[in-house]
Length: 203
Image (tube, rainbow, N blue to C red):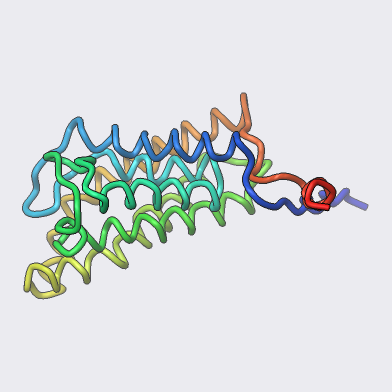
């Protein structure tokens, strides 16, 4: 009779290490917005989606989603973290706003899928998760939002998105390759503390 893996222990809260990882990946998103920003109409091509795919591939759904939310909160507060030194409310109500909100959905989707893959993370499974979350979920929010913000037809906007797809597929592959190497050589512990430990500390 084949062995079945033991169910993962329930974990609660966030540790200091979790908070540090959230801060590091929020900073990584900011760093990836600066170099290689290629203007393609109103929505530039950047490396930020690489960070959106890499964070949940390494950190899981909870920490990655919080990292993306932290980055967006800092941007909304006015920090110039977007290409061209933009920040504040304007980018969120413009054509790029839907893509940025889509990053939250993308990080959550990828993280949930990766949670089912671990501890056996494999490149092709990770690549598929990145395509579903980092491209599918992000485009699902971003494309209609951009069409409304620009006043263009949805079909024209979808056609325009074709310029982003090859680069996003390459970033999905790169994120999966990095994540596979990290999980193989230095896996990052899951978020939170074991539930029984947290209960004893709270008692």
